[in-house]
Image (cartoon, rainbow, N blue to C red; front, side, top):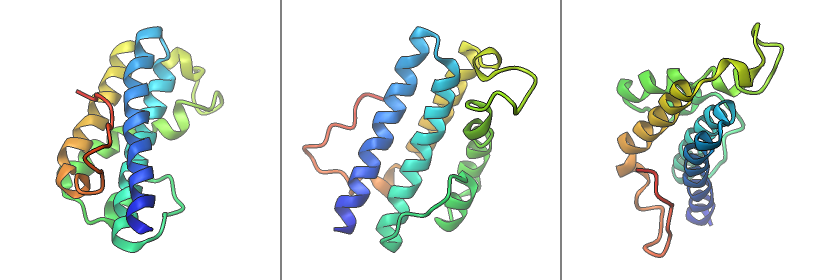
Length: 139
């Protein structure tokens, strides 16, 4: 049961990352940034499930990474994504509404950061997926 639950979270993480990448092409830069955050959050939660059999009830990437005892290199990247959980969605967080403050280059950098996290922790999650799973192209 634990492995199946983690697998579902991981598959959704890959899907979110793929959608983040694709939505950039239609100008959804704020949405891409949010989905990059979500992809990493779900990736880390899948890893937490494998270790503790529980889905952590937090959206804080740094808390999840700390619970997983991930290396500093992952934390450095995660800190790039943390603000996007709020800034990409709520118009009263900054002077601009979210879709006005995100550009293609910013969104692309957020997606690239999320991909780097996936790459850095690949050994932690690769055995969760079955050979039949197609997590999608995130290259």
